[in-house]
Every structure is written in C-alpha cells, then in structure tokens.
Length: 177
Image (tube, rainbow, N blue to C red; front, side, top):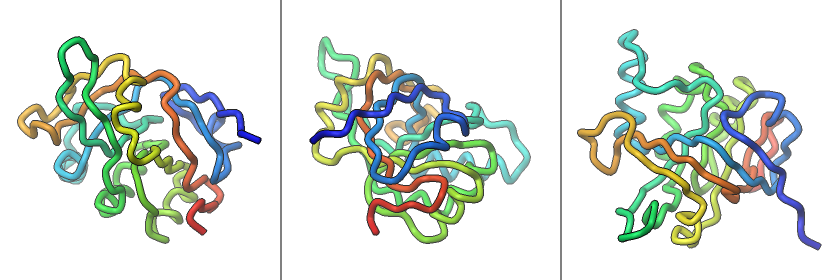
C-alpha cells in the first residue's frame, strides 16, 4: 500500500506543518529558496550585524542544493540535495528569522531536532539519486541574492509537486530513529 502525498504550498505556516509527522510523504509546490554553506554563512553574518537580508525568511523553505547548469531547452539542470549537517551551525539564526522548513539529505543533530521543536519548523529530506527527476519539478529558477557566490548564491525556485519526506517534525519525531 502506498501513502498518498500530503499537498503543501509554500510559503509554509504553522497550520500547514503542525499535522506533519516524521515519515510522511509530501508534495510541495510554490517558492523555495536554494542556498548552501557560503550563502548561509553570509546571511548569518548579516543578521548578526543587524543588516537587512536580501530575501525574506518568514515562513520560507530553504533547500540545501547544488544546481547544475540547465541544458538547452530545460528550466533547470540536475538539482539534488546536499548534506544538511553542514548547515547546522547556521540553522538557529535562520529559524529565529521565521524559517519554517529545510530540505536536504542525511540526518540532523539532536540540537537541530530540539531547535525544530522550539521554533516549530520541519526538516524534509529529498530523495537521493534522483537529481535529474527533481529538476523536472522546477518550473523556474533564478539567482536572487549573493550573485558573486556563483553556484553558492541564493536561488529562488518555483516548484510543483516536489516530492519530499518529513524527516523531523515539530514534535521531535525522527525518521532516522
């Protein structure tokens, strides 16, 4: 028996994510921010300096991604998740700004799981090994901040029926346990 995916629309709010449990399969549509290590570091430094971020994080979803250049005639190249644990040191600062979900691969630390409960946010994992398939779920992708970082810039992605699994919910549930 296969589970029916729970349809979500970003930006996310507490009402949408409060019924999610670890292990749930979701289908996400809407705007997702794409950012990796360098962009996270720059955002956190800006926040600590009291500077305004170039993008809003309230109710946002951040995908830890490594996009490939789009082949001719395609919206996006392969778009797979990168290891989430590398973003752990930046996560609380971004959660404090209203971030509601993170997408990546791999398990998160016990500290991050506690922060997800505290800030009422979720961590999704994207299926591994299907980066070419995931690119077909991207309807638009563009760099929206930190252009100088090249592939580590912040991207805005419009996704439709993007398949995800709830790894950590707002109650401390953990798919890896």
